[in-house]
Amino acid sequence: MSITTSSLRSRGRISYNLARNVMSEIGKRAGVPFHAHLARHWRAVKWSRSGVSLKTIMNLLGHESLKTTQVYLEMLERFRPG
Image: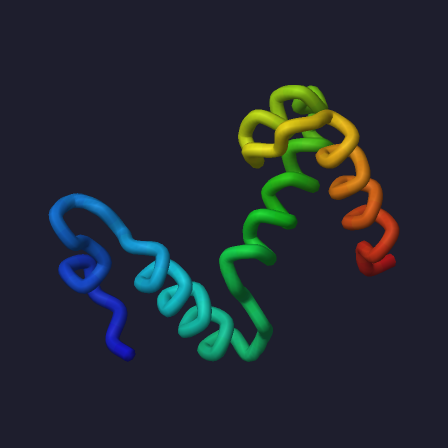
């Protein structure tokens, strides 16, 4: 897969499939697994560690309850590499 600026755009938007393929290709080139959901997890933890409120993270992730977001972040912290 060749990643170019022109291949990233389709009528000014990046499709989910294209984003997934680009992330997968980046992971392959770097020799590590990388995908959209992993990026989502990473971002949520970064926000939390930077002091972003749980309610703001909830809204950014599209969760409907604070409990879901809290459980999500606790799970990520529990499995974080030491």
